[in-house]
Length: 86
Image 1 (cartoon, rainbow, N blue to C red):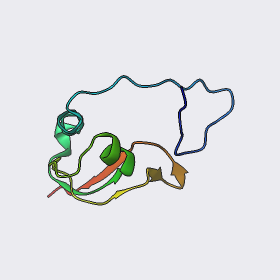
Image 2: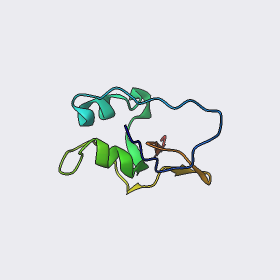
Image 3: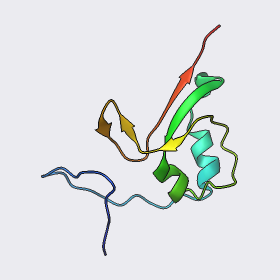
Image 4: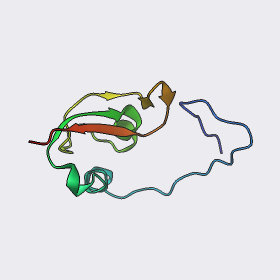
């Protein structure tokens, strides 16, 4: 089996394949913490979009789908978001 990584791999780290997720869009939205409230803005990893086949599906987050880089560290399948408290 061939696995292509979109990010650097680290020596001496054992990588495992994740189990497939049924209804990815629904599970993705459920994984956002309820206390997040109204998400003002988010950046979502392009791999969530691709693997989850999210094109044309509503996941109730606003912002671009881009590469999963946070603070100059490339992490796969991440989403960060901003909320504003009144």
